[in-house]
Amino acid sequence: MSLEAEIRTSRYRGRLAPSPTGYLHLGHARTFWTAQERARAAGGTLVLRNEDLDSQRVKPEFVLAMYEDLRWFGLQWAEGPDCGGAFGPYSQSARRHHYVSALERLCAGGFIYPCTCSRKDIAAAACAPHVEDDDEPIYPGTCRVNRQFVISKRKFSWRLRVPDEELISFVDGNFEPQQFVAGRDFGDFVVWRHDDVPAYQLAVVVDDAAMKITEVVRGADLLKSTARQLLLYRALNLEPPRFYHCPLMADETGARLAKRHDALSLRALKAKGASPDDLRLNW
Image 1 (tube, helix red, strand yellow):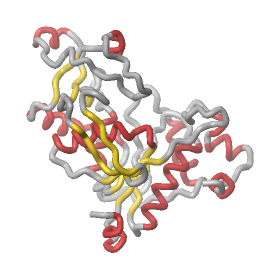
Image 2 (tube, rainbow, N blue to C red):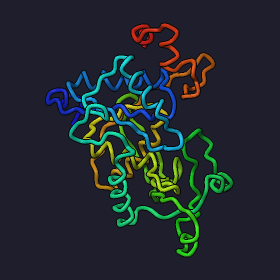
Image 3 (cartoon, rainbow, N blue to C red):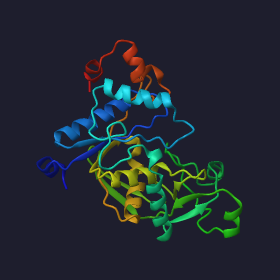
Image 4 (cartoon, one colour):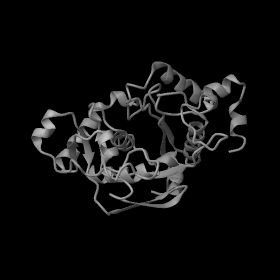
């Protein structure tokens, strides 16, 4: 269904999906504000999901700050960990059974295989790392055929086998037509980590489908992840949402904002006396 049709029927469901592994910065705020504005324009529902799967980096103070900073900036949601809703729980740490079920379906369908390679192993391969700055280097396919006794003796992750040379295309709501070649632009990717935690790609697909999200608004650094996730939607026989990727925000040196940019965190900007209206003035 198009955005225009959803505006007429009020079926639009968008989401904010912060990860409390640090303080939210101005780039997060701009993307979240865009998500809110698109939900409002469609007369739809905005959902807050706490993406807290990374137990090594998630801290209680970051979770508390997430709620405080989002509210301070003027963001409002109708469903979330703090207010409930029909599609909860809204914290990923409480949704493991959904991810396990999806993993079992992928395994039964033959879409995934166990992989004992470490990131160091992949980086040492002739075709890795990929020339572009990506969240996951091109996997050389070492474990596509793996002997059972090797798997039983080592920790392993689960990878989705991508259809080599298949063109994965979609129309982004902001950047318009996008296309990536599986096996060339991205390789077999991890859906379940060796430490028994679902990977980002699987978790967000499962959650967006379960929460009936109709449009995903997020940063342009995840355009290639969208191509990966479309393969997961297909393997799981799920209807994908539409996608709208926002330009990334940079600091005064041109470097992309990250959570290590404390000076541009919402927390620091608020402490300096900035107001949300002032921060949004030039958007």
